[in-house]
Image (tube, rainbow, N blue to C red; front, side, top):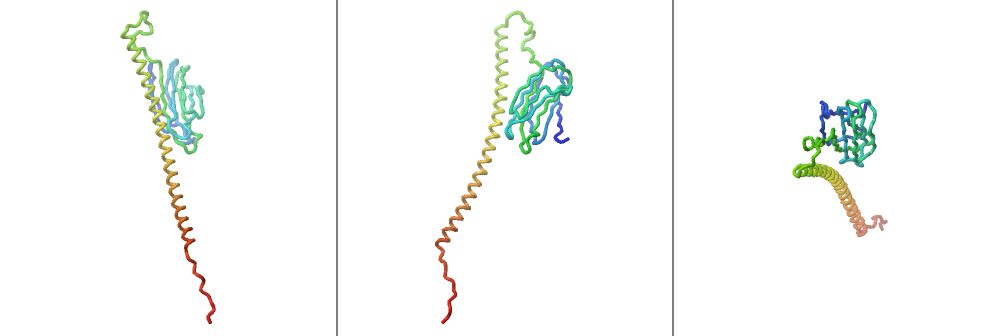
Length: 211
């Protein structure tokens, strides 16, 4: 079947308490690409994606559980986030489709995070006593670093998207400049030929009767 899924197994073994995958890939026009991940029951996962380049920066996306039931489906989205907790154990499938486009290639970034983040400090969730000043500082620094990582990812995507738009605009301006140059050249030659015809002396035809 045309546009059949090109599968990529993100992880062959069962995912542990926390893990994730980031990937940027090119999706040709009239194609679909799917990824598969085995998850245990009760595991939380989050799918974040964004179209970086191509067309109107939109893509279709859907997620299916091991039973083939669609648990998420969006059409022509530029970006989105889908958090979910696995209700059944098995292989989950999430796909990106560019089948609605006939000539625009897309570059897509996605971040697939699985599981809850482990606590920074041992037995942090079961502690009764308050955190010490050093422990509080560690937690604050950890949260600040996570914010920095998210911000860096966001700005990298924005930079790639803006660069693509700038290169596309530069190409259009270059083509327009070449077209204007050719038109100017043709108009200049036409004006020269027209002015030359005004000042060209026309000789009378030679045809008189001899005496």
